[in-house]
Length: 144
Image (tube, rainbow, N blue to C red; front, top):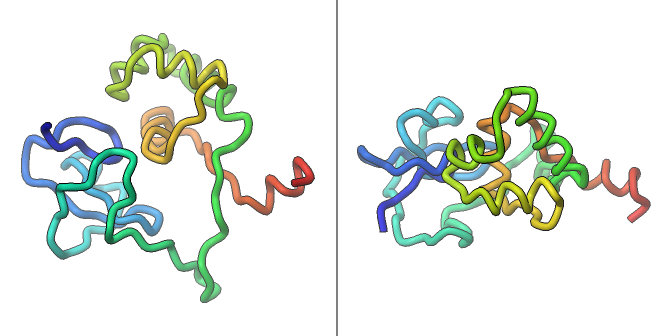
């Protein structure tokens, strides 16, 4: 199985780049390098999709503690659909951009599937929309 960029999902045609994006160490393509800060060290390639990268460490905030925990916005489906329509993309077009099946796009937009962290990053990157909100904001909104 050929390695893929952890942000956009495109195959890694050249040597992988290791960058820190929002506190996460990710293996990215040459196009996505600009989204983070390059970090040194060996590139670990045996991590499969859905697993946590062994070098992952939570981001530290400027206040000395760890950053606020982020969660996918409960209205992710509406934000994704509105951003896709604003860009004039069909669900099929978006699926091709993200390297995802049409059924995945349909299920996310109908709220039958909550996107995992990798898919969430793909949506955010390609649609230029923020889908993450602090847990504290969710608690105030829904009374959790």
